Image 1 (cartoon, helix red, strand yellow):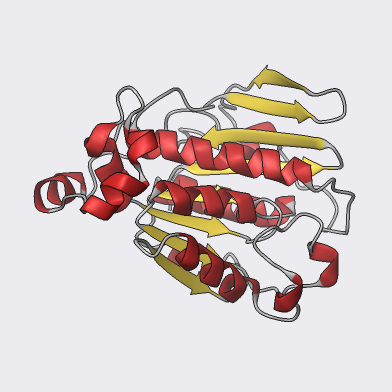
Image 2 (tube, one colour):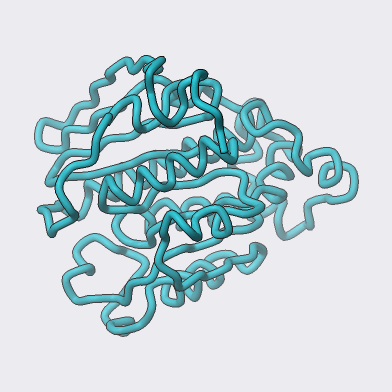
Length: 264
């Protein structure tokens, strides 16, 4: 795992194999150059947390589950609301009022019974974030406000966990991949938080695009295939249908990831 170190890799590759059903299920991605069964075993051994199972978290977790990530921890404290259904594709009309993590876990385990899905119906705070991320290899952002993202960003930097940031507004989307000690963190990009979270416009396909890209970044980090968006902010414009890229440098004065700061 080029970006994750060798946590569990030696154990799993030596002790674990793919079942025949898994070889069939994942056969099309196993065909990708450089993938093979070795990369699929890395996915099977990986533990990914999706924080927020809404517009971004729905497509991200769907594709992570379909790809065979062995353990998915879904973290969210909200229930399904009617206003969610234009974009949160894991939740259906029959799920109204149900905890989002339960709704999502049911669909994901039906999609892929070969994986473990761990629904955590809990609000993320600065006090519990380290415990919520215990044992996790990659964090995928399904949040909807910068304040919560700052909490996750600081925890991931401290715990040395890669964090894939995604956000949407209207017909726009944003994505970057944060790997501690290999590039800038979220605070390097956004030095301060915006106003408290409020409802904002979202075209349903915008989080679909960005959430899928987040899943792709996670798969690349786990398998070591491809070049993640480290130090690059990818900007999606759904109205004009094009992508831009902004180079982002590490802020040597960043209060979170600067080498001058002692990591707790």
